Image (tube, rainbow, N blue to C red; front, side, top):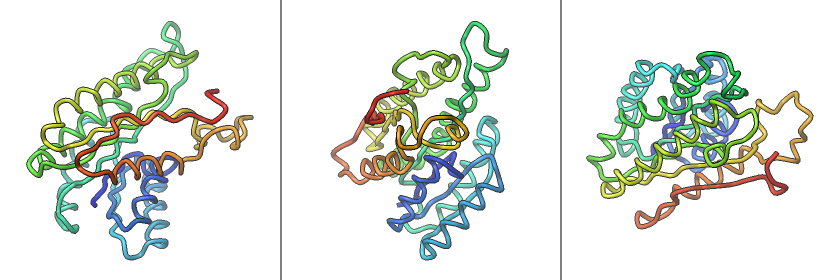
Amino acid sequence: MNVIITGASKGMGKAIAEKFAANNHSVILCARNEVQLYQTMEELLVKYPSVIIKAKPADLSDSIETKKFGTWSLEEVKKMPGGSVDVLVNNAGQFIPGQVYNEEEGTLEKMMKVNLYSAYHLTRTLLPGMMENKRGHIFNVCSIASLNAYKNGGAYSISKFALLGFSKNLREEMKTYGIKVTAVMPGAVYTDSWSGTDVSPQRIMESGDIADLVYAASQLSGRAVVEEILVRPQLGDL
């Protein structure tokens, strides 16, 4: 399979990229931080030298950059076995804590650009080829914040509710084309967001847990789709 993953330089995105690469699938990586992105690409190439791994930095909060990345990816995929996009993981995202009534002006707009519009525009760029081939699988990394409001969630939670809505609508539109859509809703996962806090890594999930679930869902027959993946720490949400 040929797999495109955004937000792929660290955390869940990096873990998902490694899971696919470890199973001999070609991957295209995207992230905003150019240095971290190419470091991740090099790490994976060292571990899996026989796998095709490409990377291109882009700020996916910018719709023009998002579409350019999508177009570049389509050209790169043509050079890969199969020549088409098989899996898209829309993982790019950002968390800014706050409350609706007092968060900084412009926070909602920023959260919507990063957490929703990035997935919307990249998906639209890649969909025509998937629809023509009548196959493909799109994973949208949402959050438990897509399901329940929580203190200090503010605009972030609003944007994640919207991403889940996008996923549900896309699922209905694409099912007759053989294209699967899965909304991934993880609870707390130990990534850089938690470093420096007093939360123990043993209290919350590993990025590899999410990668394992995404990969497993991608391996089902064409007759089955996991529509939603809801996964929480064993001891519950923080």
